[in-house]
Length: 158
Image: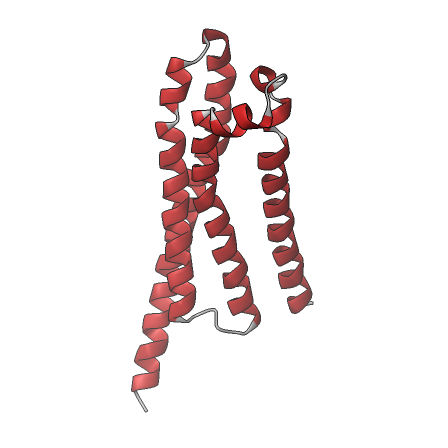
């Protein structure tokens, strides 16, 4: 049952990544202002799209690290330094995503006035979970650090 749950969570992570990757590839040609543009114009003349692709790198890196953490849990290496390092990377990636979202307001200000409310809503939909993940991982990281320290202290006393 335990391994089945971990496998399920890893499959969910993979499906989320595949879905986001497919969205990043297949949505731009169908976007309103790119509807009649050539592929060159869509992918090489839109600075926001390039920025979105750049901002997706920490998202995928965090999901890769989460996949690795689940692998460590499966191997019963939950309370190990490699797990703590992976959690630290996830936290940094979540903060980076939140920062990318905050900086993307520059594109919203220079854009069309009608696009500002939905643009702000989309930024909240992405930024708020990123901040929540960063806070949750910080808590998990502290708990893990305390457990690793206790384990190291008990191993030192024969």
